[in-house]
Length: 92
Image (tube, rainbow, N blue to C red; front, side):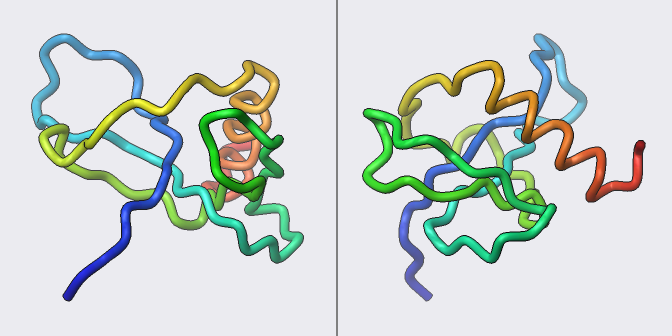
C-alpha cells in the first residue's frame, strides 16, 4: 500500500533520553470540516496549501521515519493546537 507524505505538527516535548524513540504528531489537512477538533492554519511559506491541524488524527511515529523539517509554526497557532488537544482529550 502506497501512501503520500503528509505534513504534520510535532507535538512531543524534547527528551534527550526517551524510553521509546517515538514522536507524537498532529496531521495537517486541506479538508476543513469546521469542528472544534480542527485548528485553522495560516498560509505559510513552507506549506503548499492553507488548511487545518486535525487533532483527532494524533499519532506517533518512530523518529527514523521523519523526512525533513519544513518550518516553525507561529506560537499563537501552537497554542490553539494545544487548546484543541486539551478539548479532544478532555483535559480541560
